[in-house]
Image 1 (cartoon, rainbow, N blue to C red):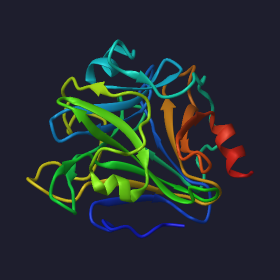
Image 2: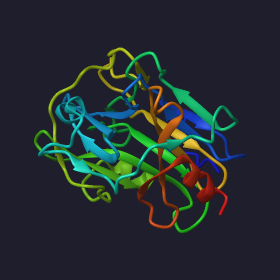
Image 3: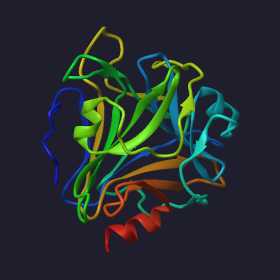
Length: 250
């Protein structure tokens, strides 16, 4: 299923397998939830995180406050974290751990087409429907210090120009905690002056890959919310782990 890309294999980190439903999970400390971080070339970080039970996008201010505040945005309907029947099995790659607040950090990079600065991306395989192949989640600049989460094709991602399909609303940046914050799994390298944009690619069999936001703590042990890209709409969807497995088998 893996679609060979213009930037593969430079700066691509590939997880999962086309032979079975696969997902990457961001584990985390007690009373916290793993997060996905996009670094942008202007020195900001944007987080996909669970604001309680609401999947959200925000900057440092929002994720540290645990709420979407006035400049963040919700990315979907509320989803209560549910027990994870996936467990330790083939197809699951866990990043981070339960001994610290963990985050999966995708560095910023440089466009291989024109050398302009751009964000990295999370690419997720989709196996059926009108969006078969892969969809890319990435940040697109809309104004000074303001970026929009987008979900579109590899071509639209690499164009690094306005016009990609938006998810939610633009968010004003509020700085960065840095690539070397404790608990970070770094995808790509932002310590050099230039380079290809980093891509975290999750390959998968079935209908599509998943990214699990895992909750830590005795009460939430083994619970998660899974994000996948719908092979029908091409947009991110947030569900329980069991619902993701059911969708993959349909």
